Structures are given as structure tokens and as C-alpha cells.
Length: 263
Image (spheres, helix red, strand yellow):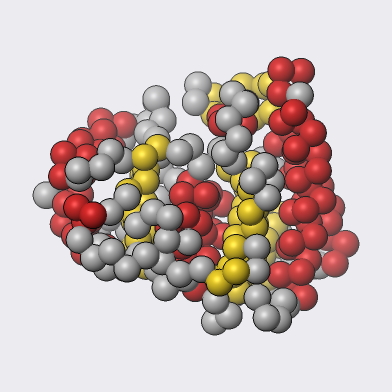
């Protein structure tokens, strides 16, 4: 990125500092104390540690910004039009099983619009970032979505469904519809944030998933859009946050995916 804004700089430094303990903990995964929040939702002491570091670092420079984070929920600042959206470890289950594919996801809203996003994969040392109207980058290299136009030529990612999800059977049916159409198997990588970042970087062409939380995808949304991609809900509209289902694509295959998923 030619010019890094003050907000992006704060986000980068917060992610880099939080990643230090995360890398150490990943190296000693068997010693971690793991608590269980739910049948398919594990969170480790590392998750809470990363969140604490991120919030501490962000507050040093932006003490009046509101915060929405996976673990602690929402911290409101009445006079601020800005809000941080934080997912300390996206891909927690990968992390807990020693699979080196997870990321810190951090986004910034202004008046309910995402204006900055950073997704940092500390193990591969890849930092995806974007700022509204300034393009998308990974490690200072400009990224663009792929230009594949035929769905049958595409690599598609997905995730879930959770074991106790009310929409589990629906999600599995949608998976079957799409997988039967594609020559290449659908990939399940285990981190929605990195899935969207990979679509932005042209490594994959599309991503679909139900029942995602806002913090899972907030940073990815601005990164993908700035890379020339397209984000909709399963109906092809822009209500993906409220509906909690998302299609993130290179834009060329969005309509085909919408039609296939609703067929």
C-alpha cells in the first residue's frame, strides 16, 4: 500500500503484537487449557489472550472507539462514530488441533460502514489488508480477484455447518447442489476470514456459508470489495449481515452461484 493511514497502521501494530503470544501458544498447543463453550465452539486461553492484547493496543491510540468482539461482546462509546470489529482467532478449531491455518481478523467501521480491514495469518506471515477506495494488499503486494467466468472452472470454499445448527440439513443440501455441479471438490479450510481473503487474492473464486457472525467476515468484506470482488446474501442481495449467509465471489460467478444454491 503506497500510503498507510493512521487507522491501518494502528491495526497492523495491534495484530503483530497480539500474534506473538498466539504463535507461542500454537507451538505449545498440548499445554493449553481449553474451555468448552459449546459442542462445536471451542475457545482456548490463547483466544482470550489475543483479544485482550488487541483491545489494549487499540485503546492506546483510539480510546474513544466502540468495540464489538467475539469473546467480550460490545463495548459502546456514546460519542464515537467508529467501531472496531474483532475476531481474535478465526479458525479456532484448526488452532486447537495444531493445524496452521487460522487468523486474527480486525475491521473498522465508520457510521456502520466498514472502511478498513486486516486479516493476519501469523503462521504463514501473511497480512491481508484494505482501506476503502485504496485497494487490497497482502504483504504490500496489490491483490485482485480471479477472472474465471465459468463456475465449472472455479475453486469454491465453504465452511460449517455446526453440528447443532437449526439449518444443518439445509446447509448440507446446498453443499450437495453445488458439489454435484463442480468438477473440483469444494474446499473446507476452516477459517471464514481466510477463505474470503483467499478469494480476494485470486487463490479461490468463491465462498459460501450460512450462520456466520459479523466478526467472522467484517474485515474480509472490505478486502474483497477493494480487490474487485462481490459480496451478497444467498438471494443475491446485500442483506448478508442480517441474514447471516454470505456469497463472496470474484463477481463473475455470483449470479450462477445464487441460481445454483436456490435451484
